[in-house]
Image 1 (cartoon, rainbow, N blue to C red):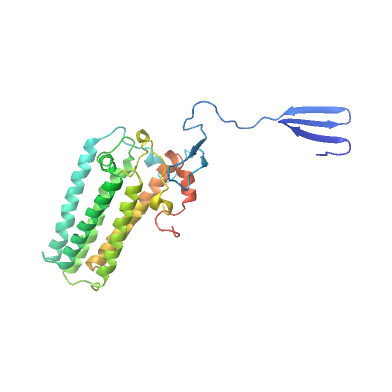
Image 2 (image 1 turned 90 degrees about the vertical axis):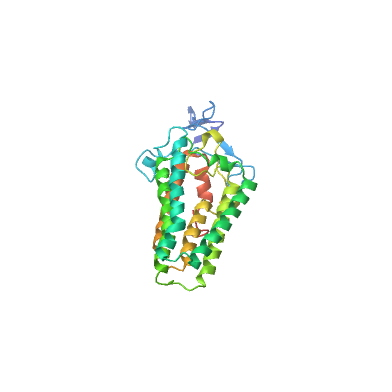
Amino acid sequence: MSDGPGASLIVTEGVLTWSAGASRRTHVLRPRHTLDTAPATAESALRVSRPENGTCLAGRAVLPRVESTGPGLGQGAARRTVDRPAQWLYRLLVLWNGIVFLAWVAVPFLLARDPMWGRGWAHLALLAALLTAHRAVVARRNPALFERRRRIGAGTATWDLWWNAAFWPLMAAIAAVAGAEARCGSALPGLTSAAGAVLLSGGIGLSAAAMASNPFFEGTVRIQTEAGHRTIDTGPYRVIRHPGYAGLVLWALATPLLLGSARAFLPALAAIAWVVLRTALEDATLRRGLQGYFEYSRCVRFRLVPWVW
């Protein structure tokens, strides 16, 4: 490389040599950043993630993701967590959800003033059959998951406990509004029940596929360090990052159609908005704390709707 008449610039094995006439200077090039050779930590490591059946992350270098400490979506909330496993919190949440479930079953019929409301019973029968099949699929493909979901583990995001406490009442409200509307006659024709059945079947099936593929599919959001938590990119996770939540969205949309209620779409949309909020908060938590998730989110760009969003 020439720098003018009689001048030359040579770089060999990290040494820069500049000469011009009788003048000669050398300089050892040093990298600005070096890799720490100490045992890998969350702050300084270069690891290669190779999931057994993975496709998106297989063979790719995964650098630790260090987020800014400034304000951002979910950053403040995600740092407030349950310090240790809290079985009493799990029991309290189960009790609350049990009360919500009883109201989900009974209140729509009370508001409809018709204990023999046909669409209401058809909805419950289909839901019971699909949830039974859902449990059977997960039990066969990922049996250990049920035990993991029977507790609230250390590191669970506090905001997620509030999210869980509010979500199922929103879902129950869809059926309650439909029951109130049924008192004056269904607003939607009977054919919408068939469309609702298809959506509900798809939603429950998608949820089962997600839980069968993901051994870390707990009921609350946390980094499961003690279980070797890793990013999953198999099954439905190849296409969207939150297939379980996509299943809940389909469930919410299916219920007004099954029950023939136009007004029930209002609480259904509220439930969907609640799900979207959780995907944003969970994404922020996983990008900050789960190694490989940031790279996965760049590879699988869609949260809930394939090739759309």
